[in-house]
Amino acid sequence: MQQPQPQPLRKKEIRQENERLILVAAEKVFAEAGFGGATMQLIADLAGLPKANLHYYFPTKEALYRQVVQNIFQIWLQAADVFDAASGPAEGIGAYIDAKMEISRRHPAGSKVWASEVMHRAPVIQDYLETTLVDWTNGRMKLIQHWIDTGRMDPIDPRHLLYMLWATTQHYADFGHQIETLNGAQDLSDAQWQAAKNTIKRIILKGIGVAEDELPEF
Amino acid sequence: MQQPQPQPLRKKEIRQENERLILVAAEKVFAEAGFGGATMQLIADLAGLPKANLHYYFPTKEALYRQVVQNIFQIWLQAADVFDAASGPAEGIGAYIDAKMEISRRHPAGSKVWASEVMHRAPVIQDYLETTLVDWTNGRMKLIQHWIDTGRMDPIDPRHLLYMLWATTQHYADFGHQIETLNGAQDLSDAQWQAAKNTIKRIILKGIGVAEDELPEF
DNA sequence: CCACATCCTGACCAATCGGTCAAGAAATAT
DNA sequence: ATATTTCTTGACCGATTGGTCAGGATGTGG
Image (cartoon, rainbow over all chains, first blue to last red; front, side):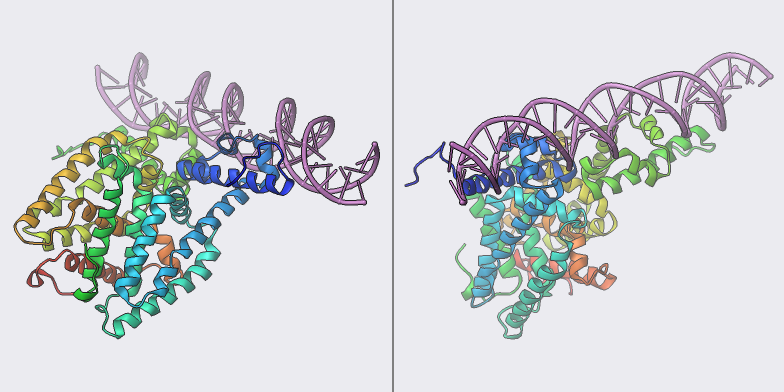
């Protein structure tokens, strides 16, 4: 039960709310126009604030962009929790696909900003790639290798399996416009998203040799 | 077929060569900086021509960009030839994966420009998406459905299988920088590219239920 | 040779960009 | 109340951008 209080805003609330407005607008504009094509004026208009106000909260365009990318990176990493909690490849990889597809559906702009950042050789988050992402990847590769060693799946190169999972799930966000066009200019329906998830899980889980009795129903 | 020209005109050679230089440079700069971040001056420097010369051959930045994107689209479609010539899913899909992976390796800049164009809602090639790409996709979906109907593979949604093929293969170009970083800042070796191809083909072909005796050796 | 078409390019321009600033408004602290 | 901190914003600035243009250079056809 939140009471709408349009007038009496406390200073801390003002800062919090304005930074949120700016970050949401920035994510959208950066996704649609790229870093170079985005302008502070566009972001300001979308956030409903004067341009000078943006520079009060974020000193430069690059600082704002950096914050957007870092926020996305956090969401991105968080999706891995389901991976570790799993008892085996069917559950772990299946849940990971579900989680990443949900991100692609709910956070398409963020995914595009991430893709754009990496495509342009990661000028802003290269250090994160070299540290956090390397560690994350090594950990998951070990887990997958363990599943292989204990006969839970075929001896697949874990690295390329991970790339395949990233590619397939993020494609639905990054190439969402192409997919919509091929869907008759319509957003994917709930059923179509479900079909996408199921098709991906079915092909990959069967493809890596997960035992039949571990597979979910499709 | 081109008519062989015994005495090619000099002027025409100049035009041909300069347009080629500009297009090659433009593809690289657009890929690395995005449309908004690319500048005519950067492209001119990379092509080794004065900026004003670019505007002699291509009236505007948009016109140059449009030509780059259209060229990529042609290469992109051409990779489908192997698909149609195949006698079944193992051969057709396997060859298509090989062809698209080869494009990712040899044409990474083009792939990035394409990805960027689609991510930004295809401002330049939307009409191609709605006509050529729709037709292409429908044709391949029919072929896959025929393979399903004749029991050559499992009843997989052909649309999502195609998306999976695109996503997985193009990922090695579009996210090449991330892959290099995770590979210790090294380009993938011949053997690593081969491993990537094999892993993708193995997972997908097994995942869609291609008969064992149709599978190649991995 | 000459007349013509094509190619080349330094200098320039209007528009737009990211970013600054100073003065004032509004909330908070004393 | 008053002093202080935080927030707001129109106006402005230097730098960069895509694009123009006039005039010279170079190749072509007669």
